[in-house]
Length: 131
Image (cartoon, rainbow, N blue to C red):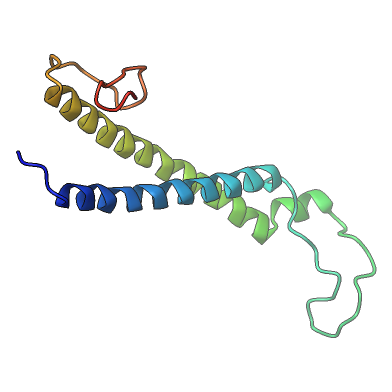
């Protein structure tokens, strides 16, 4: 194979989505941390009556445990955490599969014997990258 500048373009085309994925994962981790901390708290109670009159709320909830348990905003947070857990399991499998395939291809290119790689960082170092 002859080297050409197109190889750099191809690498850049892969790097951009990988960078976007890393940034999206960082944002998701930030939101997951917040949602996990608040999932058992009641939603914020507005200071103004919901009928729109502008009157200030004069008393707290009569049944705080029930209000927290049935709070729609809190239930949405819990629901989204459950959904995230289901989707993240699939995403982990997908990413580890891609990583394992790339690792096997690189090992083959370097002339290493075929081996079973789990797709996660297993302390292997490729001579071409030092990683």
